[in-house]
Image (tube, rainbow, N blue to C red; front, side, top):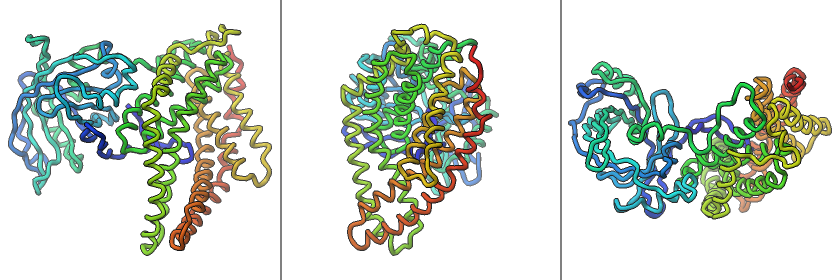
Length: 531
């Protein structure tokens, strides 16, 4: 559900998700990455012999047990519709599952486990999903009784590479069995990825059905659990109004904040702080772009609160980006300097931890939850400009094209005003303006066509180059401030020299990125006559 991206200097660039570290907070045991493939199976299905499914792989003895699970959610199944689950199971207690992604047939999720009795969900678990609950109580929504047959697949040393489970599931309603279904799962352990193809082939030869990532409790709850979440990007009508596009832009930004909220709380992956920050930045940009169509006081107040949240996220994200950047550069230094580098970076690591502690306080405050309520409401019903409410209901191209031109004009004017050797602050300003062009073009693309999307991609290219330059500026400033003591000053100087080369290369590159963006044909869609 969530696409991973990496940022440097405010850019969002594709990348894979890293593994998660244990959360280590009171009542919470760990966060574990789960990667599995689910297959349908008929009642008559039998697990095939799995020994020899791949070279060097043996099958352990089959294990059987009864699993009794109770799932909790709101009355409107809010967690299920967001792809989360909260359950208590007789063999392993409380588990909260957070969706990561669907890569082909492989469903990746993070499991967070909690101590606690079966009577009620632990407060620590509810705190992780408070952004979704927003005051709604949770209740029992499903009870499943599963007879599980499990076969571990082992390497030559006895280490577990994967497990194959055959589950016969009964959906309970009181003492009555309301439904039954069968499914087979292949859950991968680290190092077991190469087994997936051979194991799936063996299972399908034995009669297993197609891959189906639907979790058990969602199958048990039925269509109500598969509906869209309470903040959703909707399909645009054939002739969208401005309000349709505005609503979707605000919904997409709000989704980013909500999807990454529990992961920021769990910790372990800097990408989650980044994506949550991207959500706040996109929302602020959209509210700026669409401000003429919206109530000014409502818009400015919401932008102010988003600015507060973006600032709290930015303290952590900027320090994380700088730390990752300097660690990477430090690999180029000789071994004799590595001890001094580690001492230098410990100060930055402490800043990251202090920023995370402050961020967790901020997103546990009532101010933050009030902001979420406002964002959810805004994504559903943006407040129109009271002086011209009809503009929000106008055809999207007619209402939005003039608004999309404004960020472009501001960027073009700022670039023309630069002298031959712009200073660092000037280039930083150009990067910010390029980002506004990008976000505005992305927001209107569904209504005005692919030309806006192409402009957005070129604006992202300019943003990337200037972001690299700004990161270099920030890194060199930090290194100067942290260069205390002879050895630290020496390695800081080496790192600064490397950063200076990166910054100089970005300075040489950005004019070409600008020329690509500034080509007249890239803006032909802006000149179209709205109908």
